[in-house]
Image (cartoon, rainbow, N blue to C red; front, side):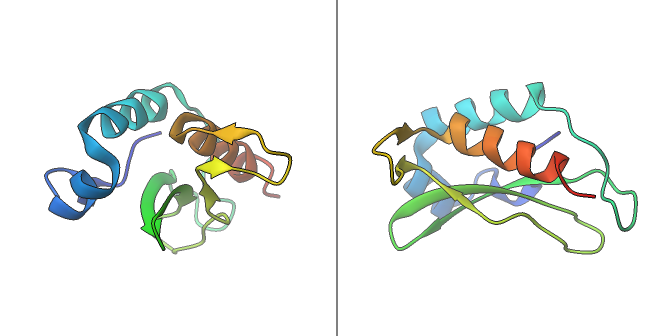
Length: 99
């Protein structure tokens, strides 16, 4: 899979994620494999974002727009720390479970 193209050289992404996290996210995305979109057959892309100061990752189809629920970094309910790599892997796993 690959990251959505709009993150490169974007001041917003660089401010929210930093160069190190973006490099880590790109490396994780290159290793990830998943099935095509179940609705249109297009390869999904990994979307990064920031909402209320929390970074998140998700998978979205660039053609029809269907997407997974965002997985946020930080601590989850069981107090396990989630990195951007964990968030990307969880998003890809959720995308792969689609019918």
